[in-house]
Image 1 (spheres, rainbow, N blue to C red):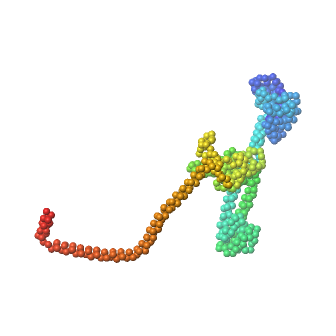
Image 2 (cartoon, one colour):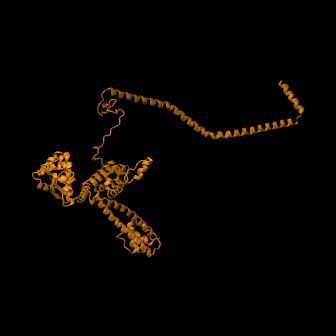
Image 3 (cartoon, helix red, strand yellow):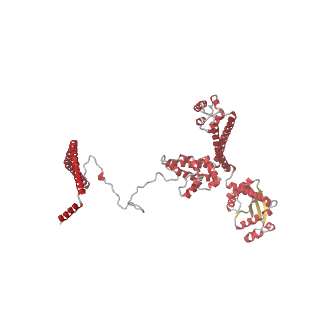
Length: 554
C-alpha cells in the first residue's frame, strides 16, 4: 500500500512497511510518537516538488475540486503501477481509479495513518525542515485565499475612494478660485461677469485679454461665440470699471492659469475614475453611473463592505443624519440618499421618486454583490436591470402598460365592491339580478300584451292625470293674478295722488299747531293769576277756605 500526502512543497508517496498494524487504529497514534518508530511503519518512496507558487496553487485548487492535476497524474503513473493507493479524499480516489486505473482506498485507518505521517513529515523527508515549510505554507495559504475571493490588483477599490474624494475637493477649489477671479477682475471689467457665465471660459478670456482696452484688437473666436464676442467688445468700450496696474493683471493671469490647470487635471481624474469604475464595478456603474457608484463605495468603506449591506441601507446611504432626526422626532424617514443623483431617479416624476429609488437600490445591491464576489467581468447584468427599471418607470407614468419580469401578467383584475358579498367563501346573500329583456325598446314591432305592458299603460294614465291637475291649478291661480294686477294699478294711482294730499295735510297740521299754541298761552295766564291771588290773601281767609272745604266734604 502506498500513501499519497499533499504538502505545500509538493506531493509525497510513502510505502507502508507493515500493513498488519493498520488493523489496530487506536494503537497507530502511539507508533508515530517518535521519528524512529514512524520510520518502522512507513518509508518515503517518491517526492514531486513544486517549481513555483502558481503551480502549487493550481494543484491545490484541483485537489479542492476533487480532480488530480497534470503533474500529479504523471507522478502517480510513474510510481503506483500495480499498487493500492491510500488517499485522504474519496472523491479524488474515484477520479484516479476511473482515469488512471489505480485502486484507491479511503477509510478510518488511512486517515489515522495520514495524521501520523504529517506529524513526523519533516523527519521522514530528509533535507526539509520546519523553517522551510512555514513560509511555503504561509505563501500558499495567501494565494489560495486570494483565489477564493477572486482578488486581483485590478479590483482594488481604494483607488476609487481616493479618486472620488480628490474629485470633490477639486470641485470646491475650482469654485473658490473661479469666484476669486470674477471678484478680482470685476473691479476692472464688471460687465464681463454677466456676459460670460461659464467659469472656465471667463478665466480663458481674462487670460487672453488682460486689460479691457485690448479687447477690441483681440480675436476671441477660439474661446467664445460670435454673439458673446461682440457683446464683450461693446461692453469693454463703455465699461465703468476702474483702472488696474500691470502688476495686478499679472497676478490675475497667474490665478487664471491655476484655474485652467485644475480644470484640466479634474477632467483627467474623471476619466481615470470612469475607467476604474468600469473595471471594478461595471454593473453598478451601468445602473447608477460612475460618480454615484464611486460615492456609494466611498461611503461604504469598500466594495466588499458595501456588498454586505441590504437594499434598504443602500437606498438611504448618505442620509443618515436625516434618518436619525426623523426617528428621533417621529417623522417620516427619508426615501433616498446618494442614490437620488442617479439618472433613473432624476427621470422620474416627484411622486414616483420614492418607488424608483427603492427599486433601484434593490437592483444596485444585487449588482454590487455580483461585482464584488462574482466571476463575470462585464456589465450585462447591470444593463438588463437598468432596462427593467426604465420599463417600470414607464409603467408608473402610464406610458407603457406592458408586462414586466417578476410582476403579475397584464393588468390586475379590479373587482367592484359589493356590500351584499360575503367576506369569507364568496357568493351573494341576495339573489343575483336577472336581465330584463322587456325593458329593451323594439322599433317597428307591436309590443305584446303582458304585465309589463299593463304597468306601462298605468304609468301613462298617471302622467295624463298629473297634466290635467296642473291645468286646473293654473286656471285657479288666474283670478288671484288678476286681483294682484288691480292692486298694483291702484297703488300706482295712489302714488300719483300723494303729492296733492301731502300739501293739504301740511296746511291742516300748521293750523292745528297755531290753535294749540294759543290754548297753551291761555292756560299759562290763568295759572299766573291764581298764583298772584294766593300770595295776596291773608292767613285768616286761608283758614276760612279750608273750613269751607271740610264742610263740603262732610
